[in-house]
Every structure is written in structure tokens, then in C-alpha cells.
Length: 263
Ligand SMILES: Nc1ncnc2c1ncn2[C@@H]1O[C@H](COP(=O)(O)OP(=O)(O)OP(=O)(O)O)[C@@H](O)[C@H]1O
Ligand SMILES: [Mg+2]
Image 1 (cartoon, rainbow, N blue to C red):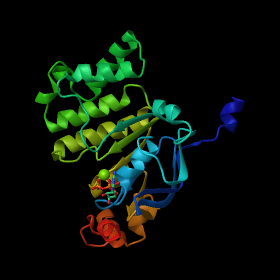
Image 2 (cartoon, rainbow, N blue to C red):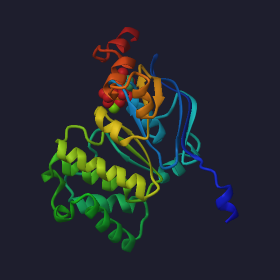
Image 3 (cartoon, protein in one colour):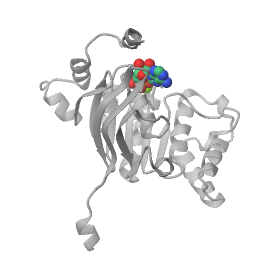
Image 4 (cartoon, protein in one colour):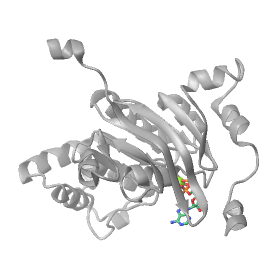
């Protein structure tokens, strides 16, 4: 009881002055933020803003140049293994083995995390049901549609019960129905299991519907960060999140020209 009274929530993610340079180009340029446990946090920004780079650093897949970050209380530089045990990740680029079936992909991933056979079977069954792939479990992934692959990747990201789940463009290129389905899973996961979610998306309406808080990142810097409601309200009673996005990031198409200026 006493512990319950004194229980404080520890941030699931802390990022302090995080910087990542590729040669002299700062893809991530001194960003700071914290994500609370069980929060669904959205990282929005134009192409090349630095979202995937940030996620890859937090997932220990890329070394940082300066600053610091913790995930689930572990330092991403000094405690890589603990961070890896605590996270699940769905990459922007599909990362399934298309020569295996859906079930085999999940099996393989669960084995990598040292999950015993019985637990594997139980979790795989439950997750296949969650993402509505039970009937396709024994079909080779090369014969899956894009939406089915995305759903399988989400299931795979959850198999070891991560405390923090990174979703980099989880619904990119999917039809509206599948996007809605996937967002509903994400929301359910976020509310029913204690997982903290950090995601990127280019779909403003979805970020608006599903994220508790949003950071808009541009040229490697956070340009604004708040709840979707506050971000919109600051602009006016009719403002959409798209309006907020355009206000902070402008209308020009982002590409590699800035990097080219430096290189
Ligand atoms: N390995 C790398 N080497 C050199 N430059 C890189 C590398 N990875 C990313 N960049 C550059 O860093 C910048 C940020 O890229 P990042 O992939 O983080 O953007 P993003 O916000 O995820 O964009 P998108 O919305 O297109 O996915 C871009 O200019 C990109 O070209
Ligand atoms: Mg990206």
C-alpha cells in the first residue's frame, strides 16, 4: 500500500540535447523531450526532419554524436542490452523474412529473445488473433499484402512484451480501412497493456486522434511540442493539426538540398 502511495511515474524515455551528425550535417540537432510511461507520443515532421534517426538512436541501432538519452530507465549508449530487452520496434522499411511464414517469423523473433516454447506458442496464438492473421499464419510472408505484413510486424514487435514500442510510419502506404484497424490495435495496446508508444507518421488526422502528445521536428530541431488539442487551440478554434504542421514547418518540400549545401 505504502509503495502505491509513493509510487511516482518514471519517464519511459528521456532525451537531452540529443545530436546526430553525419559528417558535418546535423540530422538531429540538440533535441530534448521526455515521454511518460503509457503515453502515446508522436514525432511528426517533413521528410528528412530527423525522425527515423532519432528512433534509431533510441533503439540503440545508431550511435549518438552528443547529448544523452534513456529508454525504460537505461542509457542508450552504456546499457544497450537492457534497452534492447525493453523495446519493440516496427521499422519504416519492412524487415520481415519473406521466405518464412508469418508464424515462423514470430517464432524466430521470440527465440532470439529466449522465450520458452510454451510461452512462445501462447503469445504467438494471441498476437496472431490480435492482428487478425490467424488464418494466414502458415502462409509465406512473400504472399502477404502490404497491410498484412505491417500487422505481422506489429505482432512481432510485441512478442517479448516490450515496455516501449517504437513505430516508424506504421501505416505508410496502407488503405484507409487497414490504417484504421492498425491504429485501433495501437490504441488498444497502449491502453490495455502498459506499453509506452513513440511513433512517427505523416497522417496528421491519425496523429491527432491517437497521440497524447506530439513533437513537431524540422531540420533536426523540435519546433513545438504539446497535446494535439493545445497545438490546435493555439492557432484558432477551427485549426486542424495539418494547419499546425504547416505553420511550423512551412510549405516547401524538404529534401536533401540542405545536406548537399554542406557536403
Ligand atoms: N546514414 C546516413 N548517412 C547520411 N545521412 C543520413 C543517414 N541517415 C539519415 N541521413 C540524413 O539525415 C536526415 C534525417 O533523416 P531521417 O531518415 O531521420 O528523416 P525522417 O524524418 O525519418 O524522414 P522521412 O519522413 O522521409 O522518413 C536526412 O537528411 C537524411 O538524408
Ligand atoms: Mg523516417
